[in-house]
Image (cartoon, rainbow, N blue to C red; front, side, top):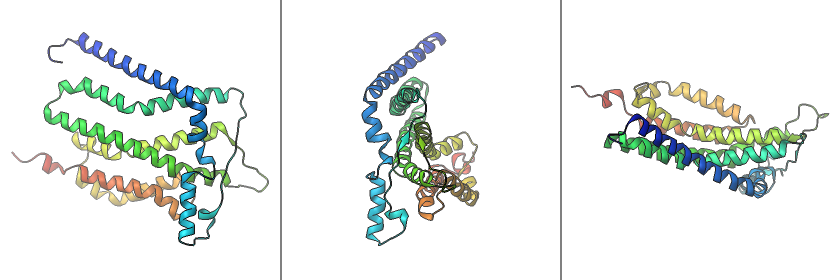
Length: 265
């Protein structure tokens, strides 16, 4: 972009935004059309006893002769709607959010195209690596949230009873809010290595800092895992806590000590 004026840059940014919005719109329309099938086969799948993770738990229970209800019980949950307009608005909002998540690689590519001409070759390699790693890690976290964390949370909270006189009736709104929150949170949580790398680049933290506060990080990770999946059993906590701790250790491996980055003259 050498020799380009401020208005030229602004025009390029306008074109970028137009392309991104156009892709979001096309994907949003496609998801809106396909939403009834997507809702039944994907979003509502954790409500059914034949969901892949529930089958996995029963397989583990049978293989190791575990008789605990956690591994053996059958599970289904029915949703109710108490608001006339809720299904329509959820139809629209879910299609929109799925289009946004699906278009993340395209968004990152467009941003890369916009900023890459202003970067040095070494900077290009670092930024391109960060974009690829960040995208892959986001989707890994989102998939873990969908296949493990959300089903565990749903199964615990939907069967939890404060009193035998109270029947749990799960509303569609509540289900979707928790579904989106957990899946997106896990996707964002898996951006931890990228975040620490960026903080190390600008000099906020380094490898020694993360090592020094490793014990504090472990306590924080366990607390976060307990909040996300409040079942109280070690198995559930491990499913969330171990990947988060792995990400913390991966963050340590990805960055250097400040002395290594700034050798003495």
